[in-house]
Length: 163
Image (cartoon, rainbow, N blue to C red; front, side, top):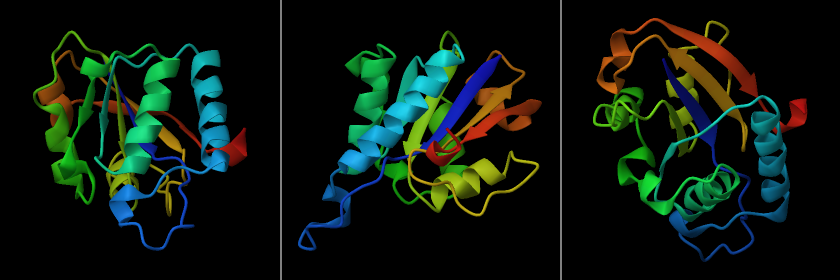
């Protein structure tokens, strides 16, 4: 069994218009909402062993917060430029080379990419995944490269406003 957590980065700041989109930092409001999600995941006995994140500052900061909460070592945080503006196929490509020993992975990315990817698995589609929102999907397989062909089940969809 493999579990994939699809997360949109925490709420970021638009305060500094001179910053490149890749460089926008998180807002305190984003940190608080991410802590709500972390509490939800931990209360429900979820674990995360590896994180794949976009190279944008707001996504990497979100990934580090999650990593800290779940004791994920730095070597188990993969920063991938391809996650930044990916289509669903490009996001699926991120999982093929993961070790079979890893069962629980979180992808931290952006809209519309994460929403579009999540909707390929959701029976009830969502219009958009809000910041800090998570969709959890479990797959009946022991190998990440078999994800596209495995039976799957949506475990939950959680947004900060739902907590």
